[in-house]
Image (cartoon, rainbow, N blue to C red; front, side):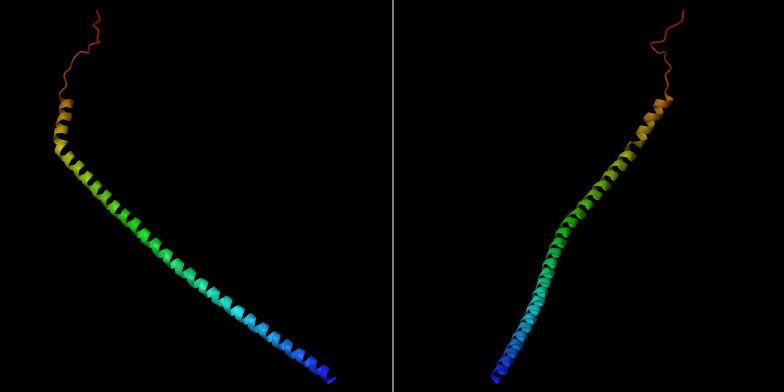
Length: 118
């Protein structure tokens, strides 16, 4: 009977050791999963920062060239306005003279289609 109780005791101890090993394996697995998750998050953050940096560089290049383009357009517009203003001041007096002479110098003539009533 003692050998039987010794056998049961050994089985219980073996079961306890197996249970402890299983718990330890679960803890290691959980720890490894957390570590893998942290590594993945770190890698994702690094990738995101890298892509955002590339995006900002491209955006700066595009917006910078657009800024230069808008400055050129504003300069061309100002030049066109200056040219039109100078042309207006240069030709205003002669156009006014032509317009007034057309209005004031009226030559009354009979229209060629007018028929005299007999």
